[in-house]
Image 1 (cartoon, rainbow, N blue to C red):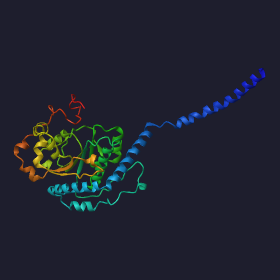
Image 2: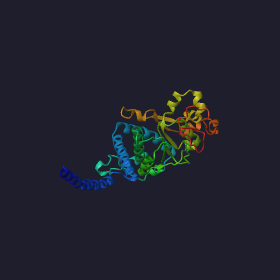
Image 3: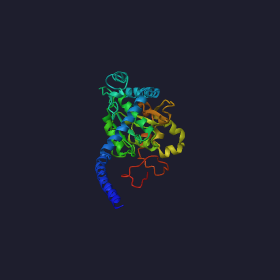
Image 4: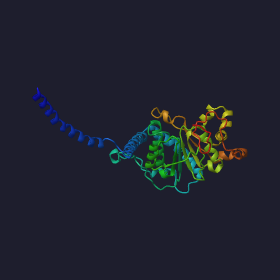
Length: 325
């Protein structure tokens, strides 16, 4: 029995080195497993960019894009006519763009989407986008972003001349937007942005009513409004949904401008119904603006919304510490 025990002990001791050698190999496997936060971020941003590229490709070939583009074209043609563009015409500008097809997927890096072809033209528009949403996780927001990118390309607006803001953006989304080349605003303007005489398209889908009201207040003059185009919630729809006294009390600038604008509704298709519903293109003909009474233009009190129960926007806490989300 002693000999048997000795033999068993000898066998156990002989087997031990194999376990130690196996354990020695494990660190190499563990070293390859964890990814650095930088590598993980690059992977995540690559996934988001790929999804944007795929959504852009689908939108570009859709009937909705061609119909919506025609709607915007009708408004911008009239808008640019009143701005008296010095050279060429809108059709000339469009003719210079090469949008017959998007690049093949094989020609595009996995973490990129097609960039716009910048062609020098006569139309020097700028663009501001509010409230696009969390496009990294929400397909509706992602489609709204891809529409914006195609819009910039079609109307020859350099992405560096497009300012974007949403207080809900994650750090990942901010970095993706920087990669796409648009300018991410660092401060919540609450829509209070003056165009400073520069023709500007405001792209603000499904935003709170106060945001539109603030934008109008910040540009409350014939000269400024005549240089603006707003793609966003239908003002006619707001007029129909809100009681007249509520509209006039809480959103006076929207109420006052209803007779000074023209509006064209976006087309409705089943594929993009939930994404671009209740969306219209608004522009402000000089003739209509000049017909508004002098009293309308003299009223320029800054909105405060103290008595507004359902504000629908996130306030700038640096200006209004008591405001809540």
